[in-house]
Image 1 (cartoon, rainbow, N blue to C red):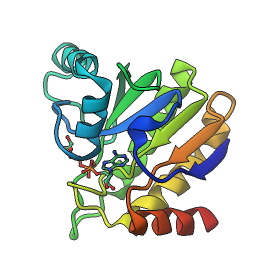
Image 2: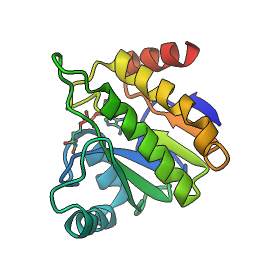
Image 3: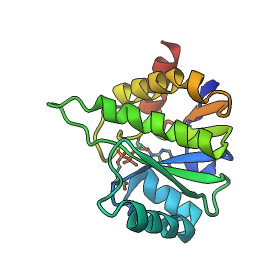
Image 4: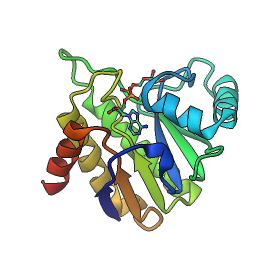
Length: 173
Ligand code: APR
């Protein structure tokens, strides 16, 4: 399993699975969620809404993941995962790590050979980017033995200069 960095807009990537930093209601919010839904069209939200009503009437818990069509994106699936809101007083990093684990497991079950992750929780949800990038890289690396036979490429997509540096540091560790 190869880990790499590709800075920029995740909606342009021709990968099998694009991961969305969603919310529990699977309703379109801001940030990367809005970008994915805008670029991918209404099919994504329609399927996400169906999944929420049928399978998660109380909302998709943080740390879990579900897949929908990627609509008009150059990807096959969007994997929606809900990151934890950052808390300076409570350690929620196990939940953030779970987002990466469950997304990778779902990708493998779909047969996705490539997957692209934004920095989950590092926007609206306030997670410091250095720590978010460290958790992303460490958790994904540790999943190679479990999903590496199917998922050959994990691409981290930093948005902005600070995020690029954070992922470079995390990958070099
Ligand atoms: N491509 C890649 N990364 C992006 C893009 C994009 N087009 N747009 C934003 N980002 C980056 C942000 O810079 C941030 O580093 O994605 C990271 C995650 O930020 P958010 O999208 O705000 O996600 P998060 O912090 O997990 O908050 C989730 O925000 O949009 C709502 O519905 C979403 O309520 C949920 C919450």
